[in-house]
Image (cartoon, rainbow, N blue to C red; front, side, top):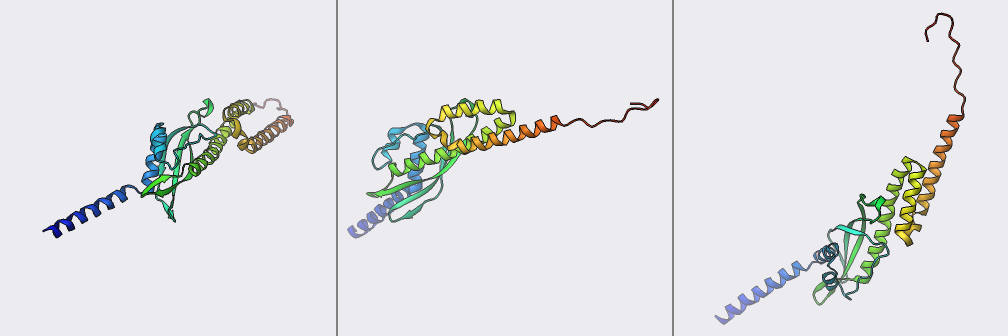
Length: 207
C-alpha cells in the first residue's frame, strides 16, 4: 500500500514539475517581460531579469505592443525573435505606428528562464533606432511630396525630438533634398521653355 502511495505521489510530483517546466518556456518568460514593459510595470519587468537592471534606451518611445515567436536555445541561452510596435512622441509622427525586430535573450537560472537585461536592452535600443529611422523616413517622404517648406518643418522637428540619433537620418535627409531639388530644377526648365507658336487664324476660321 505504501509502495503504491509512493508511486502515485512520485507521478504527481513528476507531472507537476513537467507542467511547471512547460509554463516556464523562454518565449513565455519573454512575453511576460515585454507585457510588463508595455504596461509600464518596471517592478515586475525587473523581477523577470537576471540583474534587475533596465537601462533606458537612447530613444524614448511609447510601446504599444510586443509579440514574441518561438525560441532558439543554445547551451542554456535562449534567443527569442521579438516584434516591437511603438510610436514616437513627436507631433509630426504621432499618428505613425512604427515597428522593429530584435532578439530577447534569456539565461536559465535555477530552472527559470530570466531575461539577460544588459544584452536585451542593448538589442532593444538598437532596434528602436533602426525602426525609428525607417518610420521617420516614410514621414519625410510624405512631407517631401508637399514641398520643401513642409519637408524642412518636419525635418527640424525630427532633429529636435530625436536628439542623439538624428545622425541616423542624415543620409535620408540629403537624398530627399537632392531629389526635391532635381524635381524643382526640372519644373523650372519646363516653365522657361517658350510656348509653341500657334498659326494665326485665317479670316472666317473659328477659334
